[in-house]
Image 1: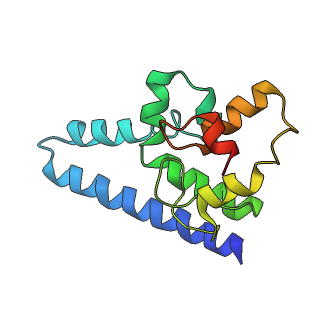
Image 2: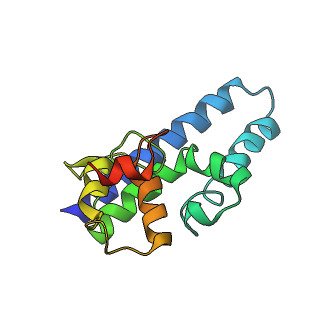
Length: 143
């Protein structure tokens, strides 16, 4: 069933890109200008999560890769085909469908082990991932 859903997502994306290209083709004054716009669309998969995780990209490229149209499609296809939970559908790399009813915050809370079992480095990472901005580590542990 998820393979059929992945094929549907891919077909809808291809349909959207085709109509976008047709609209640019109608607005362009020359055939060369129309093909120039679609030529740029061909390069959108490269700065996305298709080949490498976005977290490993430089900061200046990560912002673009998080918010370009190919990344949510890639993340959705990956979640559907690998049967992994998708994102929350709201933030960067959240995908197009929501498959995790607990959401990202629920998954973070469930993944945090009890205090005292972490090294100092793991504790700092966990605090940064779970704590709202401006909250200290002591406030997170006391929750």
